[in-house]
Length: 113
Length: 114
Image (cartoon, rainbow over all chains, first blue to last red; front, side, top):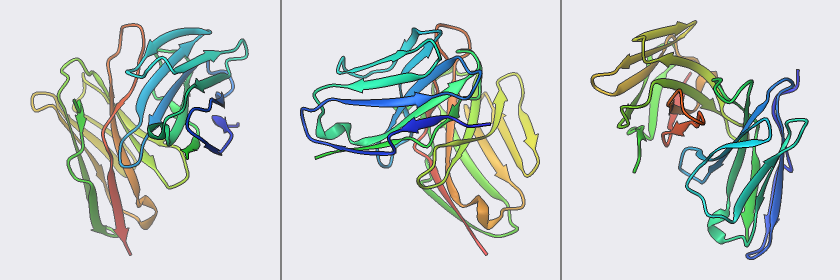
C-alpha cells in the first residue's frame, strides 16, 4: 500500500510569493496533519484536519492556511513568503484524528530566496 | 518553551552494544509518547510508543521506558546495528480534546559504528 505522498519534493520561491503544498494520506486515513521542520529542530505542528474540518491549529501566523478535500487529501497554503518559512514541510495521516501513531510522508523542502 | 527536550544532540555507540536515548518533558498533561526515526531525505518513521498507564513497552530490539514521576522516557536499542544510524525524535501528545497534535523534541543523532 502507498504511504503518505507529498508533492512537490522540492520547491524554490522568492520572498512575497505564495506556495501550495499537497498531501495524499494513506488509503483509508481520514485525518491529515501538517508540520514544519526547520534545520536543527523537531517538527512543529501547524494544522490538523479531520473530515474536512480543522481540528487544531499551531502557533503559526494567518499567512498559513490549509484545507482538506472530500477524498481526504489536503493542501497547505502559505502567503507572503518570508525567508524564515524555509523548512521541510511534513504531512502526516492517521485513521481518525484521535488515532496514533501518525504516519509521515517524506516532506516538501521549501527554500525561500 | 520546549515542552519535550532531548538534551543529547548526538550519541555514538559500537555495533552490538546498547543505545540509550533520553527524553524529558515538562507538560504533565502529556499521556502518550512516541519515538520516531528519521533518515536524511525521508520523513519520520514510527518506531514505538507508550501510554502513560504503562512504564515499559517492548518491540523486538526496541524498548521504551516511562518514568512519570520524573517526566522522563528513554528508548533502548539492543543490540545496536549500523542501520540504526539516524536521527531519533521523541514526541508526546495529550489524548482527549479537539486534536491530537504531536509535540516533538529536537532529536538525537545516533551513529552506530561497525
